[in-house]
Length: 403
Image (cartoon, rainbow, N blue to C red):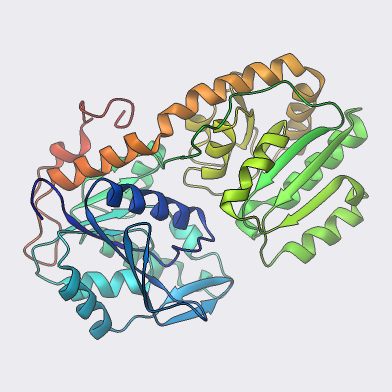
């Protein structure tokens, strides 16, 4: 395409309607790239009743044969199908957002075509090997992931702290930190607390990696020893919902815990606005987009110390607290501190709102465009020829994104 505009193909097993943070990420950058004049296509999963091809906000969406496994939709597109899409779209860049068969096959089919290949490392090996039947194959999954990364021209890490662990996996491709975007236009800064119970919020999937029993136990400790009148809202769904509801009853806190179920992304602002504090209890997260969204709504955030990006999201004591890893006592103490001090809660919320400016969609997409422009298209099935320093060094043209 002319005038610096490109044909860009996103490859992701989650897109519209998005069920994961990866899907929301792909939605936001896809429509923004299209708005900027690029030709954008997406290869993704197809759920029952969905068309094979559709246009969404200027993006051409190709849906392929799909199976559902452990609560996730996984695309099993045939090589002929992928080849046909690539022949039609003639992408200058293929940007991968999900490590699965769709990504592996797309990279294989692209072969020696002169295409730039970029992968955003949204998920660690532990994320992918989460289902019980995948755990015995963790080594194989790690090997395949590293192999896919090494056939990229650039790898983007949404957490700077992840870069070392990506390298330890055996990835030789240049790796660059680039944050995920948050795009709630007009989101308000922190407001005065509404009267009534102190309100805690969690948003996300209900699966083992989210560590929600830890949150329930910490919340119970808050109620029993903290002398605080509080309530907890858990917005999201997943295979552990029944177990968690049962756990809340066993802990004697079911009257203070609301399970809101799946909430559409466009309906989340009401949940963020109503909360006093956001809690991310996860064992493993790459960046924690829901915490970033809560920050955009001026909320203090409590993040489990096991999260790799915890110290990137939270300036401890300034816009929230990093909780000692899986410490129920520390979680309850931090909750109580904020519940008893409305002014502190408000001040931390303001700091969160200020910090969230670093996650602007405009800046993130400008950073992605800069990556696309720097790398040269691969001629073979290995990483491209761009000098490593050209990718890994900060892009001074995009302040606040490359640092």
